[in-house]
Image (cartoon, rainbow, N blue to C red; front, side, top):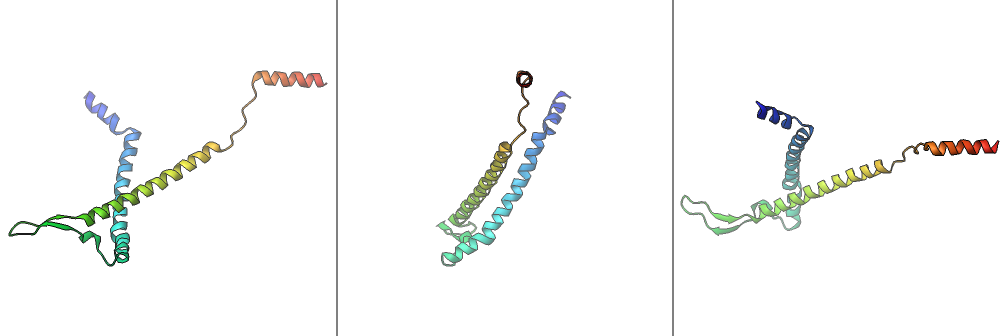
Length: 132
């Protein structure tokens, strides 16, 4: 029973839930970026380099034979994956930069001046009495 209780405490901790939400959103973001690269960017890049479809680029090591598929190195898919990574990395970099700048602005926000210490208050009263 103790192990089940420990697991329950672990699973419902705020950090664990936040991490799960982050993973789910990250997976969805990855699909969006993959679609952006595959369906928007790569066709445009293909047109710019002479109508090449990167997803079909491959080097055949061994031709297909009876009942055996061809052995190929699919470097086009690799190029597409690299572009996916670069776009995701850039998006994360920009997001972190924005968050850090927002935190820095919060830290720089002027706060109320600190209350004077008891000694300062007493010295101020003495000064005021001496003026009279």
